[in-house]
Structure formats: structure tokens, C-alpha cells
Image 1 (cartoon, rainbow, N blue to C red):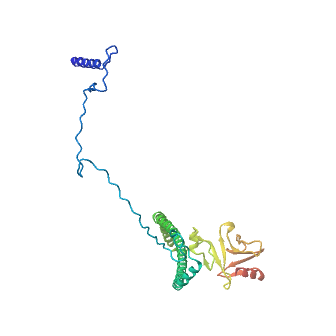
Image 2 (tube, rainbow, N blue to C red; image 1 turned 45 degrees about the horizontal axis):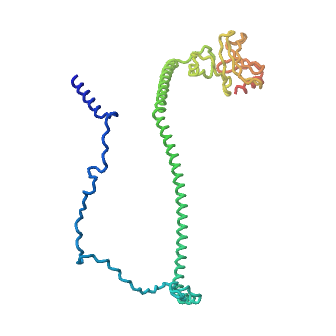
Image 3 (cartoon, rainbow, N blue to C red; image 1 turned 180 degrees about the vertical axis):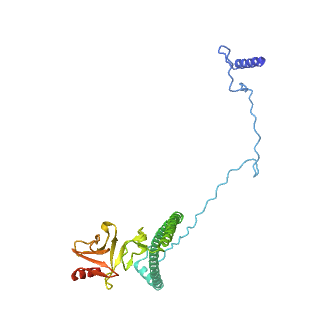
Length: 336
């Protein structure tokens, strides 16, 4: 490894010495531009080239070039002018001059027979073309208006179809929502209501069964007074009662019965009626309870009409009145 390093250093040093120019050294001789050619002219000799070949035409010398033959005067041809008619100019190059008015008139008169039908035919053709062009233009205008109208109708139909599609989508979404959400909820609610109704029906059936069992026996009456008919058991039972103390009394078979209430608890008991007064200031029915008087029989009935009091007793479905005839007639009218 060391040997290689030393060898490289030696090579680098040798190359550096060969490229280095010493300023103090001897200058080299300048090269001559003539190179290796000699300077002395006496020694230079001329060597002629090869001889030229003899001429093709023969002889020992070349001849001069032949001269061009003289060209003779050409005949100038007369140019024909395309215009005809009129007078000719003095110079032929100018050609024929414009025709005069007489010449033009004669020429037109000669060509009139041939030109007039052609012009008339062209005029008719132009008129027909104008008419057809006008008809085509009108047809184009009509078609343009029709196309515009159809475009408007198409746009309107598109808007209508779009609105109808939107409404259908809205209805479809509403129906889907109703079918998927609302109907199941309503069905559940109805099922709950139906279950409650069934429970109520079962309760009513039980109550009716129990009431029928209770109504198999006639209602109990604590006030033994002869009446037309006792209060129906159904009304009493509906209100939670078991004994009836209200009766319909008919003193006169020809008159309407009226209601009385039997009270055997307050002040030795008694009967009272529900009679509406003749006083216009009082609009409600009066329920008046009066005790039984000791001077009368066991079950007196007290009927109140304004300030008059009528006492009557019940005895075998008949009423014995102990008041004047006018008072009884007033009561009878009121009760009927």
C-alpha cells in the first residue's frame, strides 16, 4: 500500500516538471513559415503540363465562333377587335369606336323580336319567384310562430308535469309516512281503546248481572202509602239506592199523577210534593218538606200552592179534600 502511494507521488512530480516552463531557460528557435522549402531560387525549374488535345473539326488550330445569321423583318399581323359596329378609329390599335345612337337603335330594333319574349318570360319568372318566395316567407313565419307556440306549450306542460310529479312525491311520502308510522300508532291506540271498552263492557255485564240478581225481588218501600206505581228499580239502582221513597200519587183517576216524597225521619215523618209556584220571579221547582200533623191521620199529604195549603188524605187510591172548591181546582189544574 505504501509502495503504491510513493509511486503515485513520483508520477505526479514527473508530470509537473514536464509541463512547467522555466523563464530563465534558453528560448527555442522560431519556425520558418516556408517550412522545408529552400530559399534559393536558382534551383527552381518549371515543368509544363500535358498538351491540349487537337480540335474536333480537324486542323491544327481552333477556329473562331460562328456569327449569328441576321433576322429578317417579320410581317405584323392585324389584331382583330372583338367589338363590331360603329366606326373604325384611324389608328388600328384603337379598334372600333363606340356605336352611335342610330346604330344602337337599329341593333336594338333588330334584336327586339328575340329579346322582348325573353324579357317577358324573365319577368313572369321573376313574378312567380317573388310569389313563391313570399309564400315561402309566410310559411316560414307561420312555422316559426307554430314552433314558438309549441315551445311555450311544451314548457308549460313541463312545468305542469313537474308540479304534478312534486305533488305525487309529496302525497307518496305522506301516504308512506301514514302507512309506516301513523296507521300503526292509531291501530295501537284503537287496540288500547278497544281493550278499555272490553273491560268496561265486562264491568257493566257484571254490574247488570248483580243488579238483575238484586231486582229479582221487588224494591223495598218504607212508606206504606197506596200509590199508582213505585219508582222504577232501575233508576234507584243506577243512583246507588236500594229503597224507593218517591211515589206517583193520583188523587183523581181522570187527572195526571204527581210526585210526592215520603219522609219518615224528620219531625215524625210526612209527605211533600214537588209543585212549581205561580210566582214568575221563582223559576225553580220547590221541594217542601212538612211534618205530619197530629190532628190528621197517619200519612197526610201537604201540597203547597203559593200561600194556600191543601191537606188531603189517601184512602184506597182516593183523595179527600178538606179545603174550598177554588183551592182544589187550582191544585187540580196545576197537577194536570
